[in-house]
Amino acid sequence: MASYNKVILMGNLTRDPELRYTPSNMPICKFGLAVNRRFKDGQTGEWKEEPTFVDVTIFGARAEPFAKFHTKGKQAFIEGTLRMDTWEDKNGGGKRSKLYVVADTWEFVGAGKGEGMGGGGGAPMSRGAASGAAGGGGEGYGQPSYGEPQGDFPAADDTPF
Image (cartoon, rainbow, N blue to C red):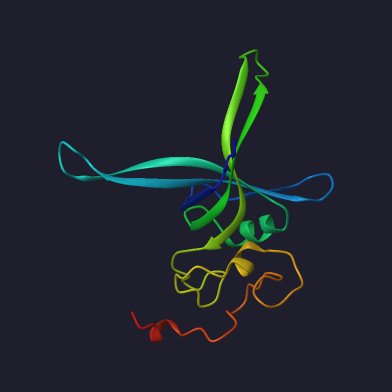
């Protein structure tokens, strides 16, 4: 039987990203993401929000830029897979498990406000620039570019909507 494991989340960081390195110098970034579910209460008719807290891990080349440009409270868009860790409790509490997301790509979202990226204006960045995809450097899917956006992007005041 075929299976499919894909997670797409957008939310706010619940804590500053924690960047560590393996003995072989591979970066690993861990952080929490709060994703709100907005719904209308059936009895009162009022809109309510219910947060879900998700632990996220980014491995490799995408980890360092994420940790550099994100802090607690900032928004992030994450695409990845769901993973389950299981272990024996050190205090004899039996078997433990934890569900978390391993991010494959990420994108900037929300207002730029001149922090980190120049001229972001709230639009998500291209997958190549934001995800830190390794490659031949250059056209879209190369090395990450964290300066001013390249190409014929309209200024924030020129956006037609």
